[in-house]
Image (cartoon, rainbow, N blue to C red; front, side):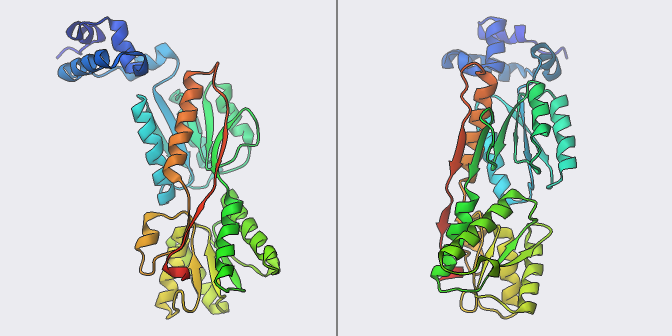
Length: 333
């Protein structure tokens, strides 16, 4: 069968080929009634655009890239949902890359995105080297940071205040009467882990406690399995009165290991996590956690990115910082 062309779609819809092109590439510029007529013609004829050809003509594609640290973490899954929803609404597709916390893997993913001539990239960077992202911008690819603050005025970023979150978490544990605390964290090369620890120490100082007394157990990964191992170390060394985990996956692993060891939560030790993923409320002992606006992070970051892509002359760079919310449940009651 011969391939259906834009001219075929235009003839059936009673519009010009240019209008069909606008529906495909700039749908916001076409009147809703006309857009619906063109979309109906596309559906009836089974038209499929030649993506590589349109990319070569325009110099870029209708795609954006999303690079995250750990797509297995429900936090990033929810961020990705927000990204995809906005991209879909505006006629873009999303290419997902998972760095697994490796700057080498992240660099490879970014090279692939550049080769695909994506319009822009949303990224939770694995490292702090700005030169890696500057190379994308030199090729005309816009970059917005997600769950990471920007340290320059010409860069959009959407993040959550992790220092404030760590401080609020430990203040809550101290308010339950705990005076000996442990912090179970992922690698301290990850900015969020470091800043949550900083906030925890600030809360201890504010309560008249020595922040150096905070016991830090650093796990190689931020997973439930790593949390179980960390709990074993804490049980062997003598449990503190409270445990704060850098994310909910670690906390759920700690909880599982404690219950298996006969330790009661919250009677023997109070426990809380961070992110408030769905599993937090559904665990055997529902988990107190710091909630982050994960879906909104993805949506707003994508809106900023596509505004920068489509309106470079009027776009204003923004640094948006959300505050996390304490969600108290059984594990600290």
